[in-house]
Amino acid sequence: MQRGPVPITLAVALAVGAGVAGGARAQTTTAPAHTAEIAAPVSSKELIGATVTNDAGDRIGTIDSLLLDSRFRVTDAVVDVGGFLGIGAKSVKLPMDKFVLSGARVSLPGATKESLESAPEYKPLKSALENAEVRLSGAKTRAEVDRTVREWRSKIDGFSDKAADKTAAGYRSAKDRLDAAWDRVEIEWGKAKSAGREGWDDAQKSFDEAVTELERVWQEVAG
Image 1 (cartoon, rainbow, N blue to C red):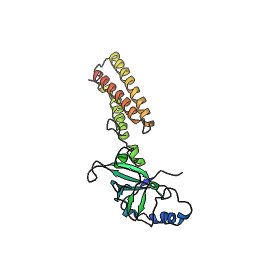
Image 2: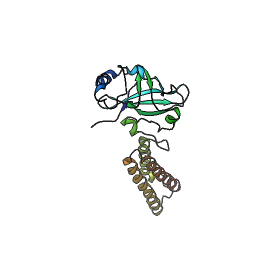
Image 3: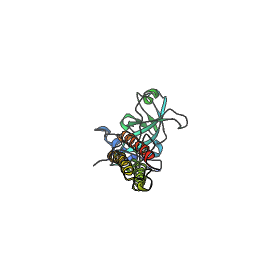
Image 4: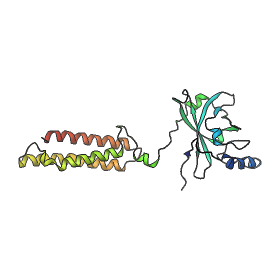
């Protein structure tokens, strides 16, 4: 199964010539897909950080990184637009076949700085491990949600020593209320564990509401 493009960094000296030289040789037939128009092999070191101009010669951005597919073919370039000295710049992903390369000079015919600034921003996906810890609206990670559940389970297990009303009827009533609130927390916890990246915000919100209700009940029944 093919994976999506992944960024390369300055430390990686990509042999673009391996794919591009073949494209230069094939100019008399059919140009390969995802290959910029190019006259000679160019190292990724020369492209990363290169200024991008339009066909009028106006500077419209800077190449931040190159993206590869699972067969190590360059598919896209990430261009930083706007900002000052790299601060506040917006990243835009563009197919390599949109560029024209002349040595290390990079141009993007028909583009303007304004058109790039209005294009969708490129936000690379994090690694699988980072995705598992993706931060949500309440600045919580999945691990933090799990830790909250463990802490509350421990508190509830020790409720008999914390009950404000030590009578049998009072304890039973308080424990029933606490169990009902805890059941809701467990339900929302289960939903949060199975929530995908898109549904995590809503899942965390529902989980937080359940925990807030559990805290309220605890304060009322615990001494």
